[in-house]
Structures are given as C-alpha cells and as structure tokens.
Amino acid sequence: MFPMPCTGGLKARAAMAGMSLSDYLLAEIKEIAERPTLRELRQRLHGRKQVSADEAADISSCDWLSQPILLIRARHGSVR
Image: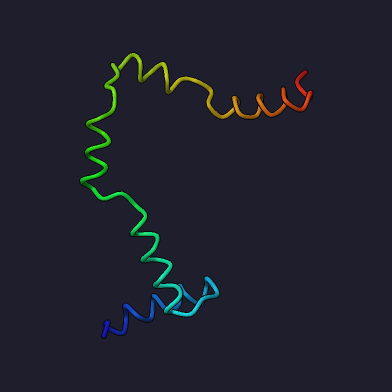
C-alpha cells in the first residue's frame, strides 16, 4: 500500500477531476506511457538539424502568435 499522504493527495486530485481513484490512476498511467522516454527524446534531438545562434534568433524574433490569426482572417475574408 502507498503511504497515507500519497494516497490522500491522489484521492483529492481524482475527486477534483470527477473520477474514482482507480480511473484517475489509469488515466495518469496511460498519459505517462504515451510520453517519449528520455532515450527517445535524446535520439530525436540528435537526429535534428543544428542551427546557428543567428538562425535561432531569427526564428525566435518572428511574430508566431499573429500568423495563425492572420491566416484565419484571410480565409474568412476579414483581413483589413
């Protein structure tokens, strides 16, 4: 059995989610199982193209938040 402080916190989280403790734990386990492992993340990172600091600065200075909004407005004819 888990120590009482551990189960108490988990029971509270389950209750806040409107779930039984068993259902909550099963959902948490499924979520964890879907995440990549540290080894998988490292493999992905090693497989990516490296960029220079200047390229990274150019990418980060783009206004990423406005682009989807402009695209939506253009599709719906509401761009002024």
